Image 1: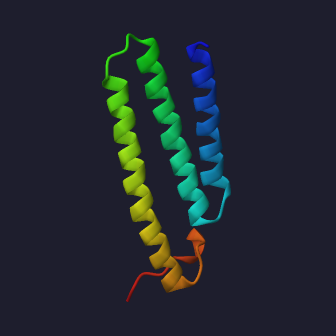
Image 2 (image 1 turned 90 degrees about the vertical axis):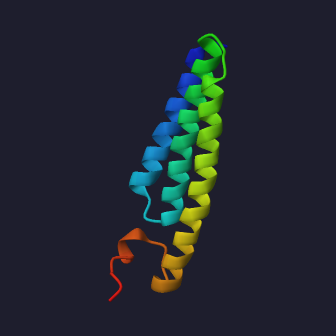
Length: 100
């Protein structure tokens, strides 16, 4: 299996993430789209690392992306819970008031 298969999966995952971010009106779906985009970039780094001589550069980027995704999920979930508590909705368009 060549690098083309990895790139095809990565492009498909990236496109699904973009579609999920643009088309959905729910904060949780937007967060899932961001996670898909991060996973697509992770697949790219791992594939190029494997087919471009080895080393640990790509693996270090993948580990950094995984740590970034975990931190983003924890912080974003806390924000979503706070928005739901204040506005009783998880739609991004309904959370448009600034605190007075």
